[in-house]
Image (cartoon, rainbow, N blue to C red):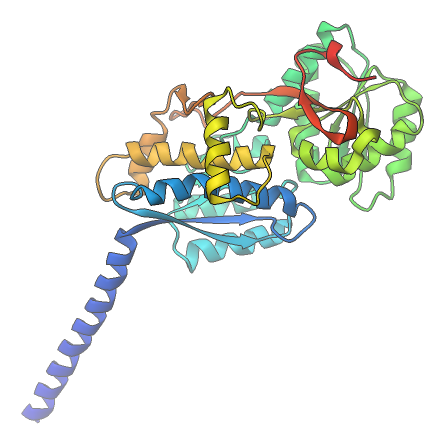
Length: 392
């Protein structure tokens, strides 16, 4: 009986050391790297945007890792495709949090994906959610401790558009939006902005992703003869609406929200898109006078040479650089989420080379940066200073 007890004791002791050894190895591995999780469209309808965003982030993070990482830790991103499907976004998020045990979620880029359904998981896990590609106010208000939106929101985009139009005395303004949560959010933001500025909405119309009601939307738009039409839709839906309404010889000014993705929309419309205005929330990808763009160009040529310069690539690069700035300033050699939150909330007008952002305990909308571009001959996108520069 004593021998059996001794055997059990020795067995338990060996088991403990084996488990402890495995845990120590795992802890050592965790201590050697910072792992982030990403869900984005890499194979679906907006794979060009998702891939470009990922390439931009990769270019900057490769530089950081080659220099030894941050606090001696390399950065690794686990990326899952979501086809811009909100259901897949949710599944990917659960996997990243519960299975992959990532430190934070970063750079969700699905264009039309909505992220409101993952907020409960983010809050429960107390996991940072940094730089989602979304202008939705649901990620900004009410404030959620874990969410940090880097790009300007739909409110800022709407203000920029309405102010420019009113300056030119263009006050008959209609809104066309895609029939999903992203399009509806942009519409609601615009409607509220126009209400505050005492500018009536001349008309509104939605378009389903299968285009079943697109002719009705075009009829509504043309019959109202507006000065301008604001388009809150993805590149696919927005381009179809634009090509069809331009065939009707409309003289209305057409302005699209940034999630239309100017690069893709230009390629889809070519000369049919001449004079179409598209909001942008990051600097122009070829304007090398801006330090962060010069850096983006140099590092992209080195680490992602097959990637073409794009707004999505710039956004991914800037998001990665902002993330690394926060990590570098987080207190302690052993990085914790609370240290990350504290460092993030201390960012005030932080300049990372011509792009600034601010976070605080009461602010999660990092940037207000919005400017206008237009589709020129051949579908090439160019920046414009004012509405007088528009191609006719």
